[in-house]
Length: 250
Ligand code: ADP
Ligand code: MG
Ligand code: MG
Image (cartoon, rainbow, N blue to C red; front, side, top):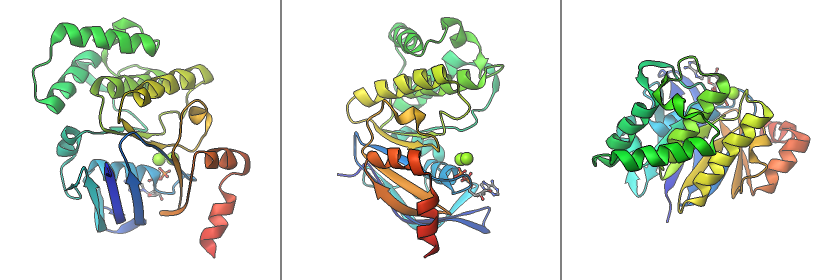
């Protein structure tokens, strides 16, 4: 059975500009899908739309999560249902520490009281895995964090919230080699947990080197023009998107 089913999804921005055209995606529990494509193809638009950002209007088609039509559900409802989006440019939030932000999100998602000691223990373990100093848990969310630290903080949320579907939007962009490796290790840890599905949006392939990939989709000008297995990543790495761009022209 499907976890996420996207059917003929068309999306416009602010009710005028059509960006995505009849997108189809079927993600099953535990699968890792990669979405690649040139700048401006609409990758982030798809991520935002799946998560319910109100700037993006669905003009056609549907989004079904665990059998429920969530095409017009609020972002909050989607998060509670088990969807997670890591942002390309994480926001700075003064006044809320990273640790309490994650605790609040965790509480909001499960609805159950958070067992504080157990929470602190798993937070500490996850931070260790991501080579994050413990003190970051007490710092204001993303305020003064470097690009790499912001991305690590996103992966920390992923590991702590343990969603059913995680959409990672260019979590690797702007990171040095070591940070990419650390972020990739965090994603691998999430993959190890049962049934956690991933949609990894990227236009580089470094982050995918050590990750298992089930499907690769190529998005060009708002259309998924090609879907292949994990080896497609290597092919794109070598030859770029040119072939797919010209395919679309025909
Ligand atoms: P990608 O993530 O693949 O680089 P985006 O989804 O960010 O692509 O953008 C797709 C297209 O939509 C681009 O042409 C971009 O300029 C446009 N776009 C994205 N967000 C907005 C917005 N908020 N307002 C206007 N245009 C936008
Ligand atoms: Mg981009
Ligand atoms: Mg983008």
